[in-house]
Image 1 (spheres, rainbow, N blue to C red):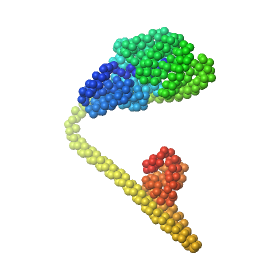
Image 2: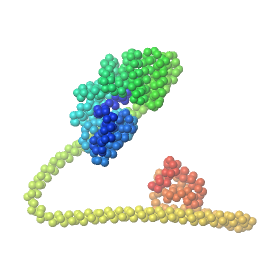
Image 3: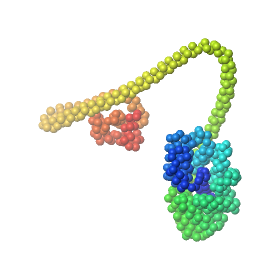
Length: 599
């Protein structure tokens, strides 16, 4: 296993949570008590948003209750800053719930509102969230653009904390990409800003990420110095997640420095911290490192216990990357204790998962290149639009100058304009008359459309009535056929009568089958002339029987009625319906009739 891969993933997953919070008051109990005393208003909305922000990474359900209450109250009073804030932190809450599609919906709504309100700080928080989501989902180009927008907006507003966030996010991104030199350039800028603002939470996270960059550069002593600095700040802040994250990072670094016992001490503290947070991912990556540390210390039984425990957790949270890494550790440990067959089996499974993830990454790279191409093309289009806008601006200036000259001329000919007033009045009246005629035409067209709709409905009712009438006629004929058959049976001795009656029955059945459909089809084509063509365009291989049943179903006739009209059994009609539904690719019989009625 390559420890740096897990290290980068852990820093990204665990460190970023400090940056959304704006340093709100930690007296949450007092804030919640104050909330009960406030009536509806902007102060209550602000307090609801602050509480939602606090709980967004801690208690998702509680956060959403507060934020949705804030959204309703803000909307009712037209307090758009409150609406934007509630949407923003609902987006963050769904991010922490790993529901990225839902998070993006709320964040996009918040972005539109903040743009209308010209709130650069609010936009910075939106772009931070969308950047993180793009980063997680592999859309690296969009992530970089979002982080750069944070820096640009923060420079405009003079918000140094948000500017720190932008530089840190870019540094963390390049750390994750395995480009430590570029990461250090951004992280050092972020650290300088954090020292100016005095934000200890920002400072601690930046220090840890600088340590990660030095670790990737194999400058392990410098890495340990920066990581320990970050741990000291987080300990002063009493940040459980931050302390756990730092202990995890330092533990992995000590393994690289061949100090397994010191690493075990740090990693056990990391597991303890992540357990308090109920963070399975943090626990899993820490336990993997513990297995490595015990392996390095040649305590193979303990190493196996920790590795197997890590595998159980990785499977529980269904994380293929972690499963792959644990399998590699198990292969190494079993190889060390001469269980080569078992080690080989673990390695085969590891390689299979690795190949699958590599293929997925390759596909993601192709998608990213496609996005880059589309972005470049869009940039070209934007440049063309800018040129057009510049031409339009010059034209506007020319028109303004011409307008000024025209005003002077108009002042000189004002007397002539008075004489033309009557003409203008007549034109205005003519315009009003044309407007009235246009409105009348519109009303007439609407009436015609309504009449056509009513006429179609009447024809549909007429066709349905015709179908029902055919049903009744068919039933009468069927009844006559049954009586003739019964009479024929009673007079079987008279061959002449029997033969004559059989001929009548056969004629009735033939006439019934032919006339029922041809009479119905004639009327149906007059009303729904394009139905058959649309149906065959969708599924050209429909049989005549299936087309007939489709026509009857369009009129919402039931199976019994269709059987009576088409002179087939109900089971036969049901079979035809089943084949028709399958050929049209519909999932259930309930969806067949609505589908046909729309054609």
